[in-house]
Every structure is written in C-alpha cells, then in structure tokens.
Image 1 (cartoon, helix red, strand yellow):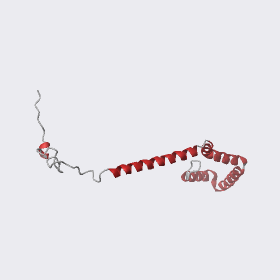
Image 2 (cartoon, one colour):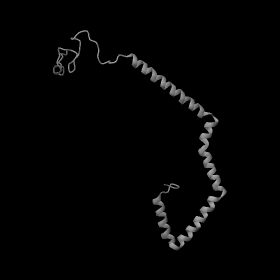
Image 3 (cartoon, helix red, strand yellow):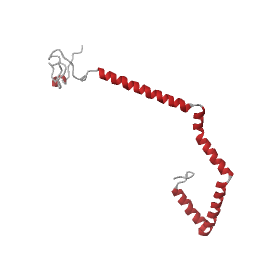
Image 4 (cartoon, one colour):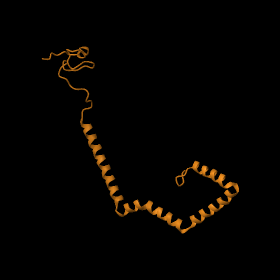
Length: 139
C-alpha cells in the first residue's frame, strides 16, 4: 500500500537514512516529536475540514445525478433497452420457428443437378483437372 505515493521500500530507505544521520538516540527523540505533531494535526479543525471537503468531492457526482434526475432517466433507458432486447429475441425466435427444420437439404429436381461432396459443380471436370493452369492465346 502506498501512502502519499511512497511505498514500503521507500519508507525503509528513509528510516535507514534517518538512523544513519540522526543516530539511535536522536531518532527516538525526533520520532516522538513527529508523532506528537501528526496527532495534533489530525485532531485539528483543518484536518476535519480537509476530510469533509474530500467526502463532498467524492459525493458530488451522485448528488448531481440526484438533482438532475439523471439516475431516473438512466433507469428508464435501461428498462427500455431490456424491453427492446426481449422483443428482438422473440422476433428471432418466431422467425426461426417458421423456417424449415433442416436448411442444408435442398430439394433437387434430378440427380444430374445434385452436387456430391468432393465433386465440383461441373461433373465433367475432375478436381485434378480444375487445378491445371489454362493457357490462353493472346493476340
């Protein structure tokens, strides 16, 4: 977790640096003073004002939505979207029910018109012959 964009490794580095610069005896004395200053600041009216302002800023979008009745409009749009989606699904289901069961089987008038798997549409041409390049005369 980062506090004021300072991570745990940075805090350890600052502590080691303070220990080297101040020494163990002065570090305890300055640590106590720093703790006292932080406690006074947190209990001050300035800190309460900062916290209240932060909460107001966080709640501002919700407050604006309530005042402009945007949340009600958003709910109405979502409801309309759900109804439209249901209508589209019902229509697709109705269309699917009207279609024949198997669309892959087409009725063919004669055996010569049916295309068998692995064969080309032209029965006279084999797959090997269809891959041969065709030479054309250019004039």
